[in-house]
Image (cartoon, rainbow, N blue to C red; front, side, top):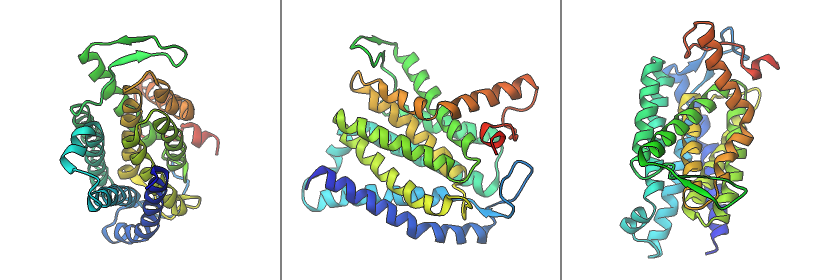
Length: 297
C-alpha cells in the first residue's frame, strides 16, 4: 500500500479516536475532580475538566499500535527487527509515555514543581539513552558540520527536550493555543521527515497530528476540556525529541529551526518569564498573568 495512503489512514484513525475518547475523558475528569477552577490568571469563568492529554495519548498510541498490527498481519514486519532499526523512535515513544504519566499525576494531584521537573529529566534521559542526541551542529545554508563530544551532545539534547516541554506547558494558557502551535509544527516536521526519508518519524508525526486535530474540536474557545499537563508536556517533549532525531541523520539541521520559527514568540515568552521571576525574586515555577497571550487579551 502507498505510504501516503497509510499515513492518511493513521491520521484518520487518530483523529476519530480522539473525537470518541475526549467526551469520555471529560466525564472521567469530572468524576475524579480533575478540574481547572477559575483563578486570577484564568480566562474561563467555570471549572473545566483537565486530562485532555489522556485522549491525545490514547488516540496517538492506538494508531501507532494499529499500524504495527497491520504490518504484522500481512507478514511485512518483524517486530524485533523493526524496533532494532527504529531504536530512536522507541526511545521517543517510551520517553513520551513517561512524561505523559507525570502529567496525569499532576493533573489529578497537583504535585510540586520539583516532581514535574524530575519527571521531565527522567523522561529525557530515557529517550537520550536510545540514541536521541545532538551529534553535530550544522548550518541549513551549507553542508559544513561540526562534530561535538558525546557528553555535550547528550547535555544539549536533554536541555532542548526539557526546554521545549516547558515552553509548550507555558503557552497552554489560551483555548487551542498549545494544540494549534503543536499541530502546525507537526505538519512542518512531517514534510521534512518525508523529504529526508525518515518514515518512522513521519509515522509518529501524522499520528500525533490526527490526535491534535480531533482534540481541537473540544479545545477551541470556549474550551470544553483542557489538555492539562498530561497533554502540554507530552506535546512539548514529543516535538523536542522529534526535532533532534529529524536532524540527526542528515545535515537537515533546519528541523531544529522549525519549532524555533513557529514558536519563536512562545520560546521568548517562556525565557522572559523565567528571567522576570528571577529578577523579581519570585519562584520560577509560580504562574503569573504577564505572559504575552495574557497581555494581548
